[in-house]
Length: 239
Image (cartoon, rainbow, N blue to C red; front, side):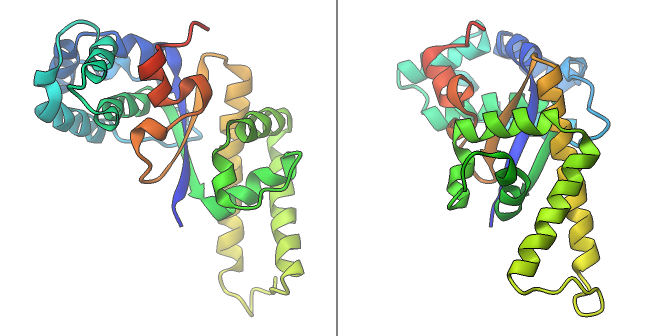
């Protein structure tokens, strides 16, 4: 089962980077001088390594940079797609990489576990993992989880997990299932980090939660105005 992933992206830094000429970004990546454009990492979250993202971006430019001019990178990508010089997936890939670059932290969990973390805070029951990728699900989940204090939220996740196990007739006895404790600790860590995401989104309107999936095509990342395909086709949101 793939992971659902969330990037906590600093929108202003992302926009600023995408407005740079491609040559400036490439030079900065090659010489490590653009690293200062990354926002500070949230101490309660983890994120992709800078060197890995530099490598991913430069690998993309090795293949596609000749198709682009040297005005603002985002506009050059949109123009290349419009003129059919670049496919949508290939054009969205560097936008996705730069969203990781401008992320203060990332979160990932198996889809089945994500249901456990968000479903109790929704107005509906989710019938399958695909429903986790609907925009209103995360609007509701982020808003409600962000209003709860962290300890109460984490405790509610653990209690709900225990209840579901009992309803399935599964044991909570460590002597019968040696993985009980490690599983509970994994849920605690994931719930803690998801609360950090929700709390920061509620407190800081300059951040967005970019939701996607492991192995998902880059153009399908994000919801609504922040879907990468929509960004490229319709332009940057005004607000």
